[in-house]
Length: 331
Image 1 (tube, one colour):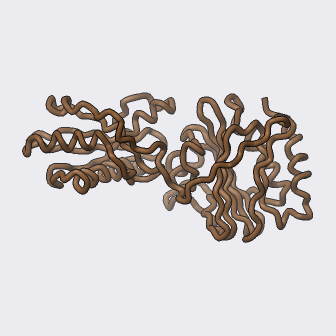
Image 2 (tube, rainbow, N blue to C red):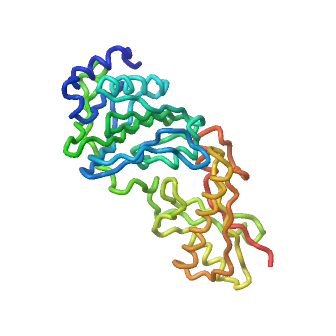
Image 3 (tube, rainbow, N blue to C red):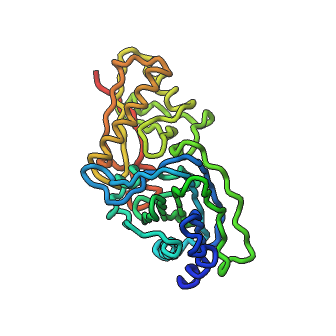
């Protein structure tokens, strides 16, 4: 259970005296116990703060420069409505002198397109369910804060990215005192310097898929592939599926395959098709450059969300639908 919303602004006001609001960085008080935190800072950074819905020209942004602070929190609040998490943070921002300039909710924001046009701290520190997230942007002069809230099946995730005056580093997280006074917040784990990273690293120990279906004219899913979050780029590493596919092609010079990228159904069709084709092409290039496959024997296409193999109503199903398949071509 979350504490009453009226309590948290009072706590924030005690932490953030108005006389110092113009000089201090935003210090969030989480409305539920924090079970994990990750962070990175840059005294001379920049942030494209989203200030509008995704449209024909992408997501409108307000570019800010200064001391950059990026933090992600995992909260022990599995049943809490996202609005009950976001509203106390919004109230704290207002108490600290910020003006809320933009708010949106998952599909209204632009769903997939908004998520992948926005700076998001990589998994596992920050998890975003494309069907359930909320975003808020706030400004205080040339300082700004973007708050993203989403969930997994067992936790709520909060991301706070802010630009403050250079030299005004963001203070460490303050735990929610009314709810969890006896439990200190865990030490922050530094985030990687790059904002984009894989969800899980490729593993050379993963089992290679059986290529026998290709002999029968059936597709094979290359499920061990890892792509950078929101990107068409394939993470470097040893992939047993690519080694097996290269071996299958090498066994018969007449064999050819089409690599077909697939996405889940979140977001716009055109964007999904484009992303799926980029990923298929990245796999094609890996086969050519890393495994010596003849470029003429491999093509790449993107099907987007048009050929799901599982339901798009659950996160597990959406994960299964995001894949690249090798489809044998008839000579």
